[in-house]
Length: 107
Image (cartoon, rainbow, N blue to C red; front, side, top):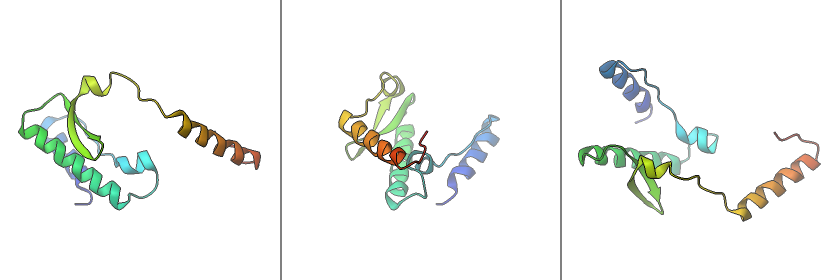
């Protein structure tokens, strides 16, 4: 199904008259080429969205909770900012400090 996003974007634009674009989220969120996990997860999100349409669940989004794809209201999805665990943040900061100590500028 490679490239289906651009095909769908063109069809949406044709049918609605609204400009539409496709984005490969795996590349943006993780960087680099998509892994097998990225591809399977993207398919699961897409199937979740299709199921939501069939159930008439509009104003919601597909979300990953644990290992399950669920639907949640958009208001719930944007209600609060998720926090990065301090331990993970400290580890990332420590790594960046070590890189900068070696003369590599990280911005």
